[in-house]
Length: 75
Image (cartoon, rainbow, N blue to C red):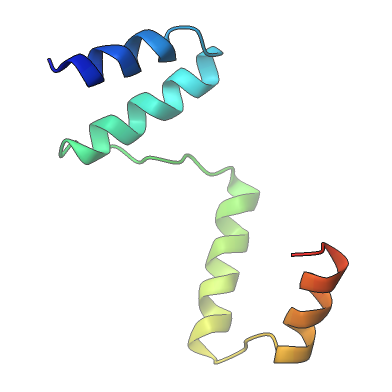
């Protein structure tokens, strides 16, 4: 193991368990493990499926709608 990876693992040990699991999933995915990186709740999965259907239908926010959201959150 490289020194940098050892430092990253040592740092991760001090994080909350949920964050450690997130890091582990990302590392496993990057290393070729097919495990899903993000686990979605049934509601989140339904929202994602609906968003994908909207994309297929070409339903996107207008420039004005995007500008409104960016202005609201000062992004």
